[in-house]
Length: 467
Image 1 (cartoon, rainbow, N blue to C red):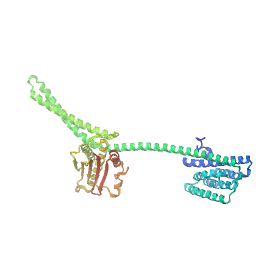
Image 2: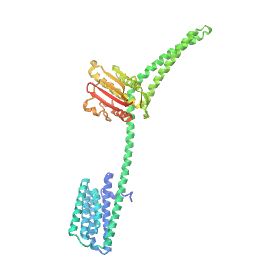
Image 3: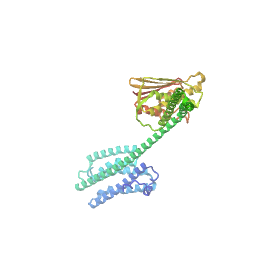
């Protein structure tokens, strides 16, 4: 019964409830069921009064039942729920008062107790919320007025025997408790449905957020590509050159060894020393290339979330170089006065290197973009300059990135850390870089990320981290 109570079926389509959203459908079906329930209850009470020998007491019920049924028929024919609601609300107002006049007294007319509960519930079901509030206040005023009238002019003796009065009073209370239980159960079920929808929405939001973060990672990885290619090319050139020299050394060593007893052992020792030196250089530069590739892979994969002691100066040096060569790959004419003011006494800093590296890459890329754009406008008169500095001050690590680029207009300065906000042309920025950078520093490391800028003068981004 409960499962099918609000089910969208043909019976509700008869009242014109098809096509409604779930919330409005539930509200209207509950209102119709309430009208049917009160009419059916009236029939039961009328039969009981007649059976007990008090048919005159049931006059009000005789009138209420056909009006309620006619109203349901009207709703079935016209599908005018608003008119149906006004009539039902009027019945809820008038029924207890007329019953009070017929029987006498609030306790004797236990329907008044029933109506005190139905009034606010019915007002919420049948009308808009604002009208329901007014209706409830009006009902309270009418009940108080009826109580005053009864005190002055009401019957002194009840019409019904005390046993019948108490029986009906108790039955009405039981009925009210049943309806309250039903409404409460329905409310809790709705709350559970809403919680389930909320959990699903949160899961979807988290998944989307993870996807956006990964998309930003891959977008920044694309910016890295040219810089990585340049960085890898240098150690590969060294490996190639030292390998070629080593091949020649091996050939000379082989020729000298073929001389047998006439070979020059001192020359062999020198050749072996040179060969060993070349091998160490090949190993060193091979490790350098491997480190660059490893850093690229770490940049693209999911962050571990674990802080480790990190050489922050090396991290700054690496990512500002990658960002610079990335822009140089797009425009060979671009040059910048790159100043690295890295504190030698900085030491190791506990941080998530992947995440802070991503922040540095974003800030450096933005700085080079800003000076590049200003250079396009001003030409040779302008000397682009980008400076990165690190300091340890009062148990705080400070990283500053200063550029003399285009600057940030004052009217958008407060928006730069908002997700999806970007000043770059379409297709050149996701609008997530600074937003993610802000979250990484503030939420992931308990630090701060601030920006100071003067339009056409430059911008300074300052990162502070716990030492």
